[in-house]
Length: 359
Image 1 (cartoon, rainbow, N blue to C red):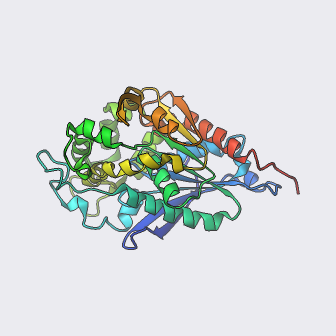
Image 2: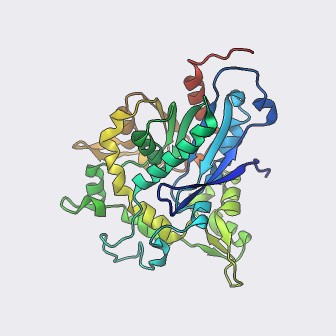
Image 3: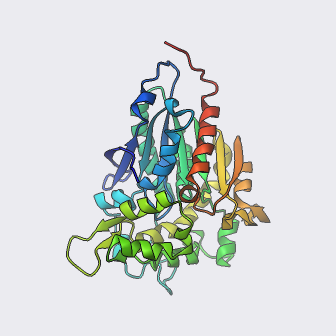
């Protein structure tokens, strides 16, 4: 598989003790040499929990071969602070992965290490500020998947920047939903999260003798077996780091199981986004997998108990559209063709009021 060329940048996170790794991609030269005075777009891409920035490459390659490739200047995909190459730059403060009990059975929820998702949003603001300096008059478009979708919303609430947004199954919980999934009406909301997600992440196998060993293991799992081959190969190539000392295990996940568990455990902080969705000014497109567990009624909000999560979230925004995609929750890695097409459609709408004019 041929990889897209990119430039690597390292910038400070909101917490100056941490760093963020960004890959910047540009279209082929023949698209860059367009003779137009109309603004172009610059895209910011935020990944899902436990994943990494390179998994956007199948989508990016399709954008660069689309009918509006000449209206795209740059695409910036970054690793969240405790993921991918950002975790390699500097470990998360307090070393979540050093806590061997993180996410384990029987750990009191008040003791579970947690990542505040608003800190991830503050990091996204840092990325958007950095990108805006490069973009000039280009229109910034925010795109995020799962936790990345929530991150894009938080960034826009903290510092309005985007001309439009595409959010792929964004995770935004409500107080009602947190209490439902935890079966508690009295617990501290900050201590509530999905135990199945946290425990599943904490138990994730993260050591393999070789990439072949890792591939055989991953392809045997329903979660990974439905991924597009390009995405699975990128996960194998970029989701692991080589261990530095000779041991029986040669590959380790860049996002360690306890880091992933701590990220899931901080999901209750997303509840502060829900009552502010009406503040989002730019148009938003929601992409939702038809086969996703989130596509079923049962989301709890505002005293209602049979809502379809993302249809309801879209209804809370000023200007939102909703599209079903043939995929599960992992829309980006399962169906990059349709993901890219929906982004292209949104970019065309965003640029519609900016007609091209020849020099």
